[in-house]
Amino acid sequence: MGRTSDAKQKILEAARSLIEGRGYSALGVAEICKAAGVPKGSFYYFFESKEALALAVVDEHWAAQKRDWTRALSGEAEPLSRLRRLFEETEAGQRAVQQGCGTVSGCLFGNLTLELSNQTEAVRARLQEIFEAQTDMVEAVIAEARERGDVTTADPRGAARAVVAQLEGQVMFAKLYNDTGRLSPLWDNCRALLGATVS
Image 1 (cartoon, one colour):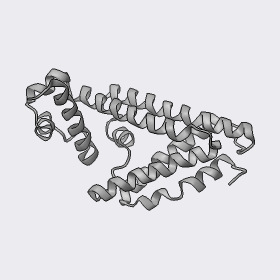
Image 2 (spheres, helix red, strand yellow):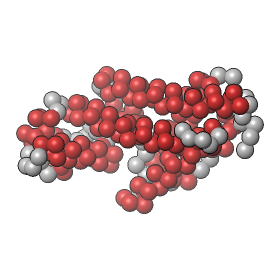
Image 3 (cartoon, helix red, strand yellow):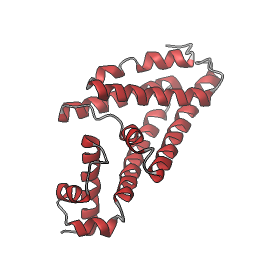
């Protein structure tokens, strides 16, 4: 079987790939283990249930995405330039996946929200925490832009929620139409939403 740490990571990677490609509900533990190349007993050594695995996949994906968002939204550039960088990197990431497998994968969090939010409270609660954290990160940038007079929005929190919702929605449409071009209007829409006073 190899080292147990390798087995756990193989299960996580296989589960994430399968969830992104087919969704969560149709997957069985045996299929996940087969894709991971590990015995079924290994699954239950690391995860008490498929739901526990889903939570682990979500946590691992958020850890990576949070690093990416923190890098994109921080630095010396003007706040709106940093927000635009987040959109550009999101579009580039979706395009790279499409070029690799032929389809737009969408957002793991958005996909699971649509599929599982009414089925498992634990996953719903974790996804709520993640979307609130995303909103916090975007709000901080919008508040900075507002202090500089770069945007006219009077409600940075509400604007941040709208920006995150727009990003999720456009990614969902990109997946639906298998067309990353659906992400192109993100920046112009965001500028309009925020009442941007600078280009």
